[in-house]
Image (cartoon, rainbow, N blue to C red; front, side):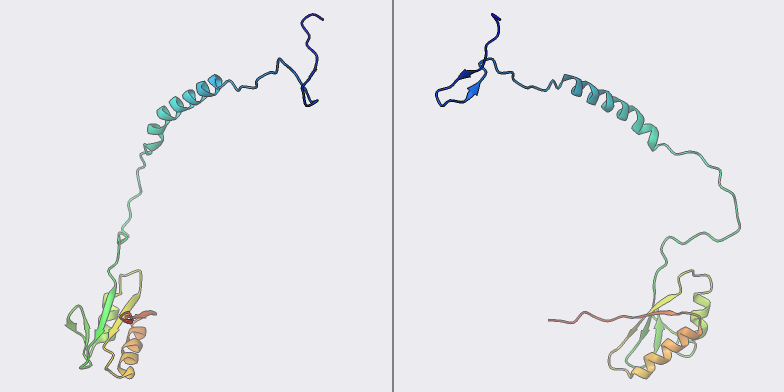
Length: 145
């Protein structure tokens, strides 16, 4: 037992080994694995970005619109009903029915002057509903603080 050093006493009475073992983690295998993974992902990433060529079937259906512009009906202080500066006062229902014939999203926004009677706005809303439009929004201005 020449090479064995048993516990020795410190001055305060606690035991310790004079040849204590230091715990260290060898990071070389970890770095090797990470470099291999980096190379694998660098090679496979461009392959994942390429799409598969597909020959789509041809149909006669109309193409989907990218973004349908919202329809805003303006009711002026004089009681005129306009769409894009065109007066449609007497034929609101017919014009809306023609405009929304091929539209998928059937909604309008009504921008009415605050000085006109509520009955005029309600009449425009009723004509829009008669044209098959059931989503009607009222445009307002934000309240000043």
